[in-house]
Image 1 (cartoon, rainbow, N blue to C red):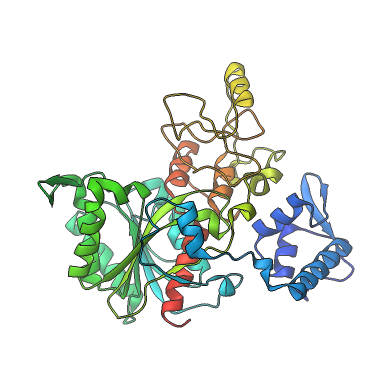
Image 2: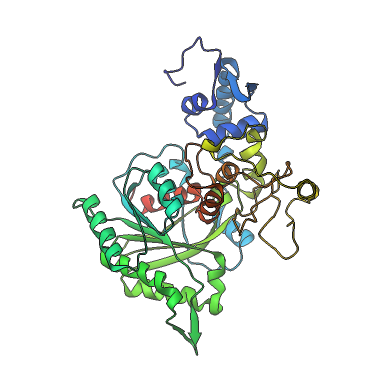
Length: 427
């Protein structure tokens, strides 16, 4: 147990237990929600007695001695063919990241986050022990959030602007101070790809993809990580994916690509994303092995149950929406997994309580509906389901917070990717 905890303390908070056991606050809440860790509520806050903490610690140690399978690691290749479409033929180099999951040591490996939004990739990479150099995005509210939560610089503006591009390059070089840039990471809009005959043609909406390529060619990072929606894989009958791989190969990067599901890495959400990983230094492009099987996914209920009775708190991004009585009743009666409106497939959808959540989105106000309460999720509840820690605070008005959250890469998914890249370096 953490020596900083006094033995005469009667009750511990979630932060104390997290420090004592060396696990995240989110996992502590999971154990409380499942009943495995006894707790009581004092003025709406969970408290754990010293006896309950000692009993729980003993249970963990006993279980670890009895079996090495308590980590619930599954065969990743089997799971990928069972769970996902269109990736069973992928050339994937799986690597175990769970052995370094709990407390990764700090690394000198550097990264920049392009089209960063609020910083989901950045947070995940930092959780993996990587060293952030600079973030980049055009969204002002996301910039405020990024600056609040990270110590390194953030460049706000249109990367197509030569002036802004120069500012970004100058900032990166100053921050590196002679060190190599190890990783460039980021997503990019893909709706602009189109074809003439059998050839992908130029489209003005592809300018951000071209900027990504230019930045990679200019900064020459050792690794590149690209994230996108799974629909990219079937765009133009697979030609878009082929073009991306060919473009990066021409720039000197060998790419491997597959679909990862966030829930496989402790994110309480079935969010699938296509992940390109490439490098120019003859390393292996590793993707992280899934370490949770579907029956052991973190559920929506485990993630947000303790917020149900929490008083509204704007500083904590927990401000419930007030709905008309008829609207609230419709939400309450809606079946889990269904949308409130027939014309929407991903908006106004009710999250399942005892499963990992459906994908968190913000679609013109149509956010996800709470499984138990007659309202949509608060920003903090969305943040929990996206796996942002509670000390990560989102800036801007509520509607802008929801946009940032809907667009974010889940930090724990990014953490798994960051740890996989560290494995390529032998770390």
